[in-house]
Image (tube, rainbow, N blue to C red; front, side, top):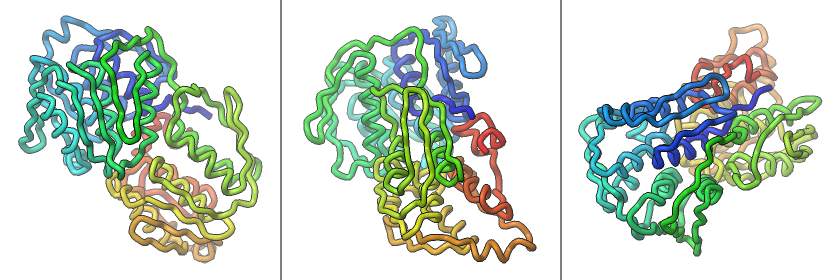
Length: 408
């Protein structure tokens, strides 16, 4: 079993590296699709990248930077796009072109763009092409809409050390995925810049960051969450090798609390987490700060005694796919009982009666909607019911580059 490095941590440290135009050696790298898109942007900016497997070397080249046409593109990586937008807006004296897919435009960026323009950058959209004239952003105090994504706030927080003055963000009372904002702040603190937090306000003082020359990336807990769910459904459980820092918390670590609430045993050591299965019990789970857990948790809920309720699932329509629709469509296909009420999904125990009748018929194909998280979730089902097949598995590369065979 191999756990790649955290995509969330990697994208943050690579942006901080680019802001400082530093060189960096990275260990436990994750060469997934999202990171390859960000690598492409770094290369266009002026970086040389070498290394294979889980090791990468990033070298800033002044000659390549001077020759850059500053044309960038993002097809699928919403985090990378939103982080890179602030980065380009922060490049004083540089006009950049940023091509963005329809998917990413639909997922939204307006609150971030408005804040960057208020700080002095010029940003315009024509078709799929954003034109950005950068400046040293002014900093200051801003209210930021956060009911769709935490990435707007994180993008500005990562840019804050390079602004003209301190940055103060007042988060919306409806801010989602605050755990990802917390991770951004933890990364700044890891490199010497501590934020001041007062209620909903985050204040970032002007202060230099001290990036290391070498950095080992924590294990990706979104992938760990999949294996933890698989372990909870297996007869013997599973010991999962991990590397993590207590100073950096990932949103999907919450899977362990959810498993304990279901009745599973979770034991964490320095370099592993061991999951022992039990008769799982249904419960209520709030996904406001860990939305990526919804797909695997919904499948786990099928095998609990008693109903489970997943709260704050409405915003999952704005992910790589409409994940709630994808899950309930699969439930309809297999005959699982559920209730969907706006922002809440209630799931009842599943005995698989319809699937038992399906044994001699054509396989049931579950539509993954080309979404890597649905691939992971549905693989938990197909492992139990071999008459189930997945419409595709290639989208797994977005976060898990080792391939479907390695996953299962």
